[in-house]
Amino acid sequence: MEALAFSPSHITGFFEIVDEPSKPVLKGSRGAGVSLSKGVKTHVKIKESLHSKLEVNVNGKVLNSTRLTRHVMNALLPQGDRRYSVIVYHEMQVPIGSGFGSSGACALSLSIAINEALGIGLSKIEAARIAHIAEVECKTGLGTVIAETYGGFEVRIRAGAPGVGEIEQVPIGNDYSVVCLNFGPISTKKVLNDVNSRIRINEAGSGLTIRLMKEPSPEYFMKLSREFADFFNIFSDRMKNILNEVDKYGFRCSMAMIGETCFSFTKTHEAEELAEIFRKHARSEKDVIFSSIDTKGARRL
Image (cartoon, rainbow, N blue to C red):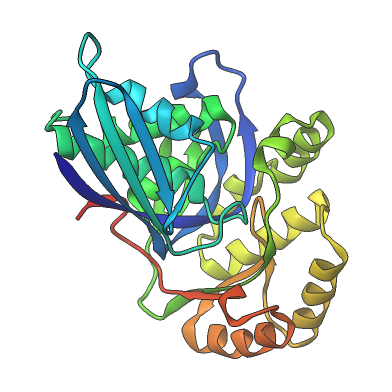
């Protein structure tokens, strides 16, 4: 029993935390972001076994921390006397922990793949809901899964899991791309657990969703994202330096939430120009990520 699934990665420009409800399906975030055609491919192999076994591989390396994976598995695998050997292969096309929604993409593609491999019969929305709950309970994200489920340029109007929360997809042309300069990871869990950070996030994000819906465009999204990032202000010195430099060239850039990644969602020809500036500051070529927009959302392959 095996299957292959894909989830786009996702960059959030701004958000508000909504986790007051007791039920995880009602928790999430309001905000806006964009899904990238670079994401996570997940291949699962499942067989009945005398003893339960789980092995998770990320880009060919065995992963020691498997809490998020186990959360998804436990919600999907049949309970009872049966035991399963499960091998998970994640092919990551974006950096981990750097504001690309990689944990959400792993959980989402895994849920879809297990559903397909075992012939459980859940809809994509039902499988995505399991991934959302896993993210919320493991504190690795809030609104990423619902965005990656549908893809495109989205505004998350009402918080919650897929099928519960509400998003508005903003139509865009084919000539938009995302270009990023990645400096490294920031712990989403640490930020979400910090009281002062949570207060600043909700102060910074207040009203931005409504403002974007009045003028829904990538350009205004970038303006509001930078406004949010400037208010939240968790910039490292190197992030400040690159933002100051690209400002002088007239590019609209901000910081991916939450990761030490400078990004711009813009016309493709402008993204290519910006990528040249990013390359001057990159530690290596792989730190400059150039991607088209995924408009299909998570899916089996």
